[in-house]
Length: 570
Ligand code: PEP
Ligand code: MG
Image 1: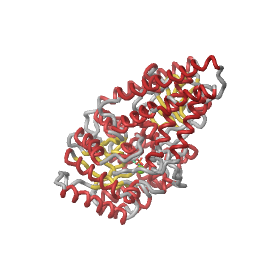
Image 2: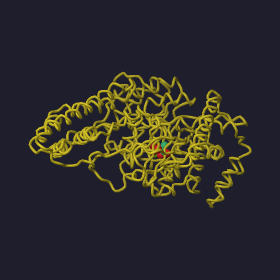
Image 3: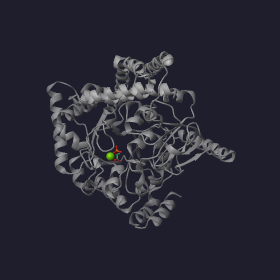
Image 4: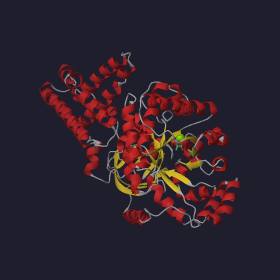
């Protein structure tokens, strides 16, 4: 099967299908003499789930985001409630039906009650009820839970139709060998998270979830985007060899961890990391990153129904600032919306969420939330070298409003006698074509720029970055994209403002030389790519690549561009 490889490496293991237990609920009559047994079966399933949840609760590392603990606690509470743990037993007896059906009936009643509640927060607890019921039904059907499975067999490969970024952040807790999905694009946020799991992953496989059987042996080649189902002996042997070679290469790369990233002709290059949660610092340090170029703060806001308050945010940002010991930590202000819905179950449907109330637009529309967010970031600036990055800027009015909001947050901290770095640099993301065309203007008002190529490609080419059906058209080498990227780098360099690329293009080793040739000296990427990009930097002589890079920029034919790029990398 062919899909889009989003995280390299080779995994060989057994498929574990992510199932939707609720779809499998059967309804059958239970004979009177077996009703006690049925009730008992239900009680045991509840106990199993209680133990599962308690064990997840206990095994959360101390530094796990607070929302994970709160999430499990809520589920434990729902499970203990009589309406869920007792009522189904009466239904089993009254209706002489099986436990799954009784529980499903009771769930429908509860969901209906929740739906009638006016308070949005309480109304949305219905989704937690459904998730808990799913777990109990899985226990009744004898499906072991995913975490337990992952422990049993480390070679487990997760096969899902789709995973939301919120699902993926939870999977960060478990040890899967690889993960593959039917839908999704290479730079969807789910794919980015998959990459941060540092395991091979492939998206846009179309029918993997239906065609692959649970427990079937599969090979996942994340580099090629290929899944081999039920490999024969020879194929298996070949991939085992490739897997070993890949691992040897990864080991070799570790030797350059401490080496400064300098080109053969002496240009110093900054290689920064993109992170999503404070725990990513471990991988960031292991890769020898010289800073954090993009901290995606929105992940603290996911898998929960409330906004994290200022103190909770501050704690997370402070942790990162402190851990980086004076190296730059670029904290991006909240970029929710589009495919990163805080509440994926929200009933509000928007026709074009990627063009909607997202990122800075949403922050400016929610001034109180934005104020607390900015205060938390500014407070963290007292504990390290924090920089603020504003996403999705499109026009000057927006930029000015954002700068005013930062000033207001600074003033309120001063009034409260709370310390922060008064000179904290403020930068903007260039990820909308309009912003790239106006890069010169943005550079004038900001301390630094950072190009978000994931969105820049999406908006330039009108290709939804999350849509597997158009994934083949998502092309970082499209001449329009290259021109916008080069133009932005040139504008920033001319204005003598720092410029980096923090989209996925920065971590693609095939593009390193081209970006160096465009004048880029700062890259920010997932930590897993840093050492490979560094190796490429160490092997590059800027003076030798110039003319080929000019030719790539001038090329309008895809085949020619590819050919020139291969030449550049030879
Ligand atoms: C980008 O758009 O390139 C980017 C880095 O931001 P995100 O992927 O979080 O949208
Ligand atoms: Mg973006």
